[in-house]
Amino acid sequence: MSVLRRCFVTSRRVLNVADSPAAKTLASVLEHRCFNPLRHQLPSNIEIKNAYELSDSITKIINTVSDEEASAIHNKLIEELSRFEYGISQIHAKKLLEMGKPLSNKSVLEIVRNNPGRVSTSWELLLKYGAALSSVPDELLVSALDNILNSINGKEKEERVHNLSSIAQIITLLNNIEDKKCVGRESVEKLVAVMLEADATCALPLVLQQDDFPLEPFQQHIDVLTYYQTYVLSQFCPFEYLKKDERLLYHTVEVLGQEKAISLTEQEQEVADELSTHLANIANEIPSYWTIKTITSEASETATEFLKLFECIQADALDQKNFELAKKLLRIFGTFRDNTKISLELYHSYLLSYPKNATDLMFETFLALAYQGFRTSNKTLLKYAEVFIPQDIGQTMLAKVFRALILVNSRFDIDKSLNIYNDNIESLSKENDHGTNLSPSALVTEALILAYLSRNELDFARVIFDGCAREKTISGLTAIKRIKSYFALYGEAVENGRVEETMTHEILKLLRNL
Image (tube, rainbow, N blue to C red; front, side, top):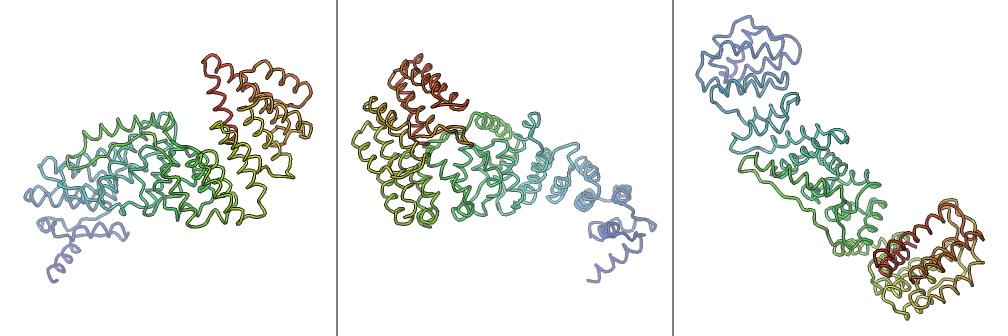
């Protein structure tokens, strides 16, 4: 204790310390024992005004000590003064290089941490100075990660290459951090947000962890989440988190339920290719003891993830408390997933939970059976479906029932489809809905035209269109454009020799989304 006190007294005797907190901090640097070999050479009138002056004063007399002693001093100056004046770190790092002496772990950390990025990036500094270290501490990797993350700005095209290169560097750093908890939550959330915006979806599995899952970026980007981003969310986000955000839960249920296989978008695939190139280049730069992971861009089947999600929903009885969720599940199992058994089981279960919503439940079951009747060419299923047609329903649901009956019957007897149309069209309103700009009569007419096109009866489909347009059964630009798009689709199918396949696919799609 007495030795430490003598050193302190000596330091105070030779320094004229300014009153500012920064100056006092600088003065305390000289109290370290590595400066003992220089104490007797320090002039008695040193006035510490800034870090540069302190560094300069030491540099002028450091050549009088051994290389080992000088090495310790240079490292100490880097460790303590870099945060005040970053240029000091470069001065003393250069001196160490000239001496053939290594930087300490903390010196490298301070160089990377305080790097303003004007000359070299934090990644470049890490490779330059960190490569000589026998191991790179987590604190250093985290510091580099945060600096690189903060350098990512903007979404303009010219910034994309820099951003993707930075993402590849961050992924590599994250992969080599042993204790992932060292990475701050804010950093993880910002990184995930950057990756979502950059369509770097393929690399999300390398970043996400179930512990302390970063849900907020997905909530903020829900309106633009791609199917694959939603699929990755379902893989890693604990259900306890997901169920707290009803909108995100609905979205995830719809995507996983409706899409049997999910692939990257064209943009996501392009980004995946670029990231793979960046990671391959990084593999040639990093120290041999670092590890690097590869990314995958293969399509993914959703059946397993959807069933896991469904089981979680049922375990919490969420579908017994939320009718909109119940309806989504009925539609998914009845049409998108082709599982009539589960669909009927849910129908009976939901009747008990939602007795006031029996009409909606009956319609969903009618649609599921009718859909499967069309898909499998099973007329018996259509007869079963008709049993579930609800009574005393409004124009919107009535139009949906007639559209389904017309389309499904066209599979077996197109004349019956026409009879259904003729018997009911006068009961439907011709007034366009303010939201969709479509009327019930126009939608049912559209279904009849599509039914005839599916049977290769183009001429009669045109007769229907012309007559209904003249009689104002269909009116408005929206309705006319929709029907014309079916004629165009039919024309392309004829050219490709795939009329039945194309029109069947279109009918199934329309039925699924009624």
